[in-house]
Length: 135
Image 1 (cartoon, rainbow, N blue to C red):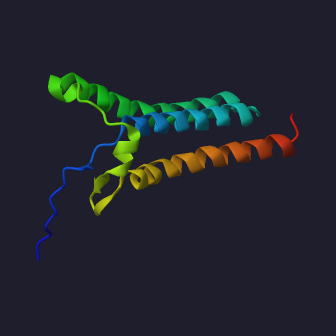
Image 2 (image 1 turned 30 degrees about the vertical axis):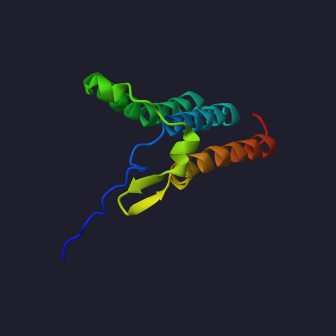
Image 3 (image 1 turned 90 degrees about the horizontal axis):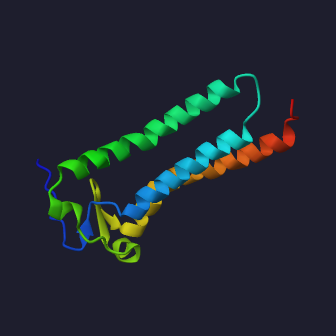
């Protein structure tokens, strides 16, 4: 029994809009800044801040390095393609391994985990600042 992939329609894409990548980087920076500002206490402050910063530098740095490598090796016509506005991209379908979903749904599913962590860490940090005495 074989698996047959449905052909991808013209109004379907498997490429993310550049705004999604910018939002991912922005949310990652928000998370790192909230950890730095709100949890900056204790004797191991330098160690914990450096480990957190290294982790998120790798998290952001690897996709950026892959993108730069692609830009360096891609054909010029592929590099300078016109990017559709986000609203148009979100209205079209987005091809995944399991089928097609709307671009808006894809962007929500991609951004929701990091947004939840960034917002949650900010809330935890604010509670930590308010409840734990500064020593």
